[in-house]
Length: 282
Length: 292
Image (cartoon, rainbow over all chains, first blue to last red; front, side):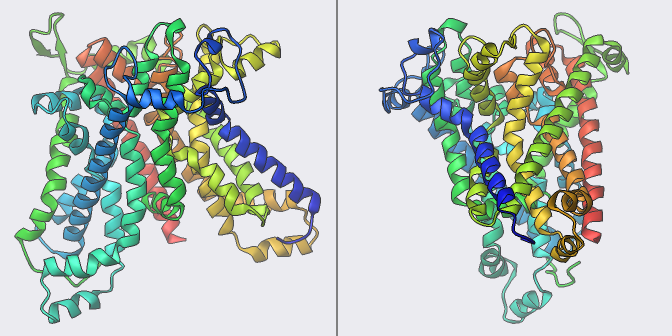
């Protein structure tokens, strides 16, 4: 701070609090809605303070089937989301750290070609090539399966680049010393490189977990069997009923549950989250 | 480039194999299929296809609906980018100014990044639904006729709001980092010369933030173009009419609901070209930033 301006500082605090309140408003209203019976909304009177249902709606959606359209509970959809998010995260981190290792620490024919092929994935997000990707998955018989939900999403140029960037800062003396001591490429990777990459792995974990958990279009395309529904796409099914029958309190409870894991990860691992966000954009 | 390396020939290929196989099967192959299908046309029963050259592209660019979709995509994306950046910059300036509680404010402002676009859509739909929404009732009390189910510009506002809400946290973090990188002695010198906070911001901080702003503009446009499918799908399904049917939504609805393979593939090819251009811009810019 360059000078004292108490009024300006007070103004800043007030505006920040208002900003936070505006950002939090939708979640506040959603939380309030979970504590009211559904007829309250139908009558058009929208409450801004908690009702007397407590956590019963949460308990209800978690254990019982989410809606008439899907015969699975929110708990089982959350389990599916967890499997998908961790599958994508583990897969993405492993294959990108291995490919970055290959590109930085080995000299072999076709190295640049491999690098450019990986780079191409940046230009081909699922959203822009929906139909043909669906056809490939269908012809490989991967519809309605966890392999179909995860494997096509684990190729990653950004993760590979991040590890490549980091590996290039590893001093060459380290590799020479390891070789003199008789360490082969596999020992060097597990005993030296992997422990050095811990913070980068944590940072990427946060970003990739959010990415995996929040997938929407992909599960929407390739799952028709409700046993594979993820929670993020399950909400849409709960909304797709005639207007008067939308169970808003249940939908809001499901919504809160669906955003909880990634929000907890971001807030709990804030330092790694910020690092991951900044590094993946380089 | 690192000079020290292992001499193995087959091990690196093995290490790269999983990534390359997935890239080829699930990225390159479908993209090639899209290119191929965009040059073909299927008959009405889906029994046979014939090569039609550029015909799909010609009919795509002759289609009034496609131009409307492009126009709504531009309106949507620039609104999201500008509103998200302006409000994030405002909050970042304030957060940079306060010393006490800065960390707490940051924590409370970054969490929406973790919310899926479709969930942002559902949350805001609950606030803006004309029959039950809190904000919709507030607007009605203020005498504003709000009906996103019938009014195209109301619907556009609604999806812009939901998409913006999610993106503010991202812009906030980058603006905050950008401001912390501004040399403090410049600010102090200006203060000694008698420039107030307002003038210091517009003449020193704001110009120095221009690389950050440009970078964020590209990132926000990419986000609004390609990551907001969930917002549209949950809130308006492209409606009323086709007023919020942005390009990624149209590819989906033409392909999966309209089952028009050739047209959908042609749209995919156009979108791939668009991502390509945006990616190149982003990388060119990053190279410059590294050279600073």
